Length: 146
Image 1 (tube, rainbow, N blue to C red):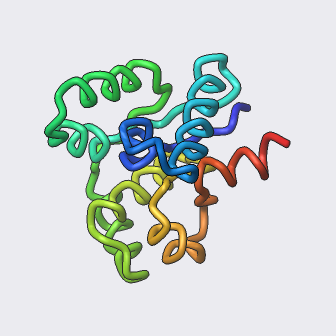
Image 2: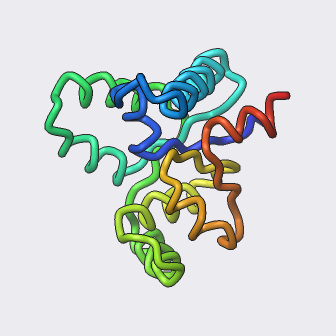
C-alpha cells in the first residue's frame, strides 16, 4: 500500500514565494520532489474541500489554476462532512486556526499517513495530534526518503 500524503495550501503555494530565501528555496525543491514522487506513483495524494476553497480564494489566478490541476492527480478527495468539522473543532483546541484545523481533520479522515506543511506554527502546535505525522517537506524527505 502506498503512503498517502496531504499537502496543505502553504505547501502548494511555496514555489510562488520569494526564492531568494535559502529556506524557502529548499522547501520548494523538497515539495516539488514529493510531487514528482506522487506523479511516479510512490505516494498517493489527498485533495480536500478546504484545499479547493482556499485555492479558489487565491488572488493570483494563474497560481490557482496550476495548483487546481493537482485535484485530478489526487487519488482521494475528502469532503467537509460533519465528522470532519467535528474533528476540526477538536484540533482547534490545540490552538490551531479554523482553516488549518479543517486541513488536518480532512487529512486524518482521509487516512493520510503524512500531513505536509511549511507553516511552522501548525507543526509546533499539532505535534501531539494522533493519527497522522505532521512534517515540513524537507523533514519528510530527510526522514522518509534517505
